[in-house]
Length: 222
Image (spheres, rainbow, N blue to C red):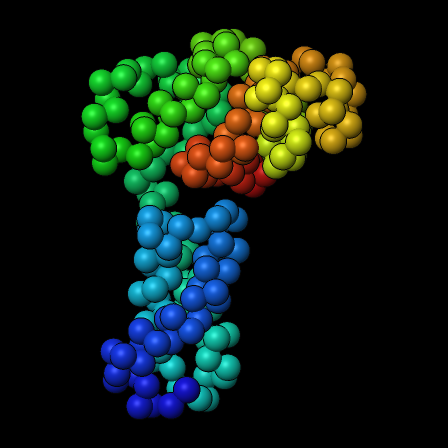
């Protein structure tokens, strides 16, 4: 990349289009989820960072894409840290305990994506006859048991055949989940409602709720 490319908006737009796959892959790898180029704020952050990289790039900085990736990841980390200061990360148990407080009229707040997402999740739960109250009551109390259940839920939520069977029969296929998660059926049965509730989040890929779960699990690990 030459210096003349840095001063041209047309060249910046051309490079964004040329390296679109690189941008999507970089952001997806950072977030751990599929990226929508129209709706994800992380992608907007990446575009700004990519433009910054174009403007600041010098040949002595090495390969351009490697430099651009460093800038993008750095800006995304700054964004995440800033968001963490304004967002309380709570456990899935707390979500179930407080979820019922989000009444239908609050859905009118179009800017509150988390509340919108919780309401959609609540409808998914009702399809299986589950409520936040029921999940709160039946959630595993021991941290290791919760982690085991969440691992099983994540694996099941990413298995298309298990998800299809779950929705078709409106219940968790305990034996199949046990085999997939390499656990006994007894372990799955003890936490079946909790696993099903969490599995729905992974299967439907609710972004805010996934961030909620992952943030809590990261805190537990640390």
